[in-house]
Amino acid sequence: MIGMGYRTIKTAIGAGLAIWIASLFDLEFGSFAAIIVIMCIEKTKKKTLHSIQKKFFASLLSLILGSICFELLGYHPIVLTLFILLFVPCLVKLRIQEGFVTSIVVILHIYTVERANLENLLNELYIIFIGIGIAILVNSIMPSFKKEIEKYKTEIENKFSVILYQFSTFLKDSKQKWNGKELVEVENILNQAKNITIQDVENHLLRKKNKDYHYLEMREDQLEILKRMVDILSIVSSSELDVKQRGMLANIFQYISQHVDSGDTTIALKLLEEYEESIRETELPTSREEFEVRANLFYLNFEIKNYLIIKKNIYKRSKL
View 1: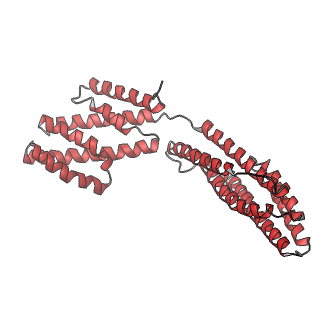
View 2 (view 1 turned 135 degrees about the horizontal axis):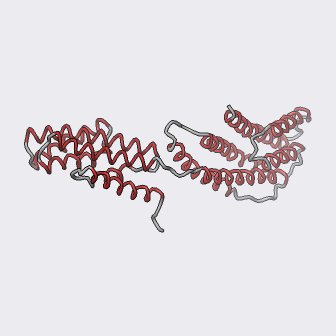
View 3 (view 1 turned 135 degrees about the vertical axis):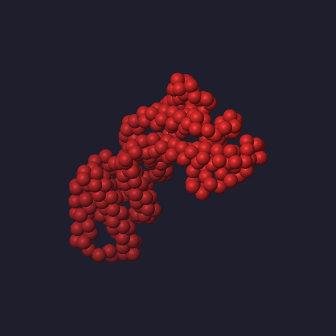
């Protein structure tokens, strides 16, 4: 059914449950408990708790200050106006202005019955506690994002594999053409994956970040390296000069493209070490063009090594 999301179902159940409990205690304005539930339910557990905290303290403050104002100055519209004018700056100062609506509704109940006695104040507190309690209860049940995150990770690794393979073909054949669309696509996938992962983190109250979040940060850092390499690859591939190290580096890129999903970078780093050794053993360039090609190849070697080291460090940390 259109619009029938997980959050909608929880809100509907929570609202009905809140009204039912309020009616069991025969509370006046008991339906307001459902409104509190609706206003407190957020996308994640952390956001829900933050919302509840602000609404609770704002409502408590309005009950105290509003009751004092009305009892001293009378239950008149002008007093209500003055109260709101004074109350809003207090909420802003305390940074709980998100609780404005619930706090005003609470004090309007007192304004309606025109008596701020213990019974009426307790009635409002009971309503608030029921609404908050139900909101916490229904929002404690959250869907797992694990499958969705794993799907994103697979898509990211596939894109990285294509990008690195294209780098390899560029070095082997300067006539190859590639529009680089995978770089844009993988960046969009990374952003989507991070949004989902942040929700997953915020559904675990004692967790600031998780392994998936660190994984995505790693891929973002690696993507920045791949972007920097594109222009240099274009320069190298535009040269028809046959340089031994060019083919060697192309083969290394191809190997890395086939092992994007692996956490073991030992072989790839060893291949790069052998590549660096071959550079040291090769005679110095005999022309400016050869010098520029070999210099750019050395830069590509430096960047892909950083790419692998970032991966090595993140996998090493995940095992601690």
